[in-house]
Length: 113
Length: 114
Image (cartoon, rainbow over all chains, first blue to last red; front, side, top):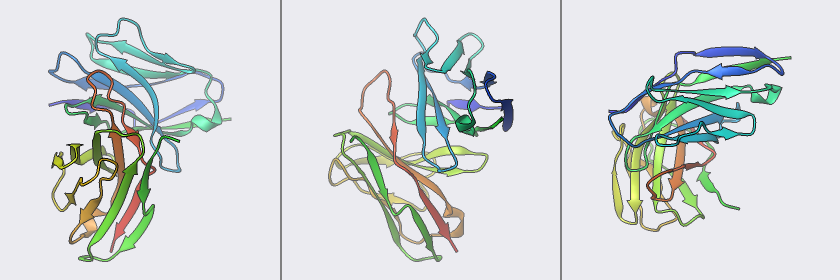
């Protein structure tokens, strides 16, 4: 069965600095996808970035990049130049068959001015 | 605008009083699902539907029912709610495609069962 582990319940970062949110996964599927979602205090789930298991290059979306290390089964999210609006809960997820996503417990990020 | 809508957004109810949370999407997606979010557990899938009249259990289906009579709608039914069903609920939809099944999430329904 697929599993996502996010070992950092909470993180903080100074505004304008970069921060890395950790995510490790376990799956026996040869083909899978990894996602990161942001959940601000208002509660909605916002898609940030996607990495396919066969993608050769690490995914990037604006200030977000995914540090994908397949052999180590890790998919860390890097946020560059943090902004106050980045304060939120962040979830890592992996595809679990039939379009299901398996989520980690999340990491709460606080950006300090 | 492409979106998934849920109603109500907030609901406080009492144990045993049947309720329905509606979900609708306007993207002609085949696949829809319901998740619940609890602190420290992330989101867990309750039920999913591959298409009209095709539904199946997810990881935590106990105490819930669903139906898919139309492609755009996927209501979640709690026949006899209990306090352990107090949670934040999300409906999601996606195209049934192989490679990148990005799920579009609704805004969430915060349910409290007293």
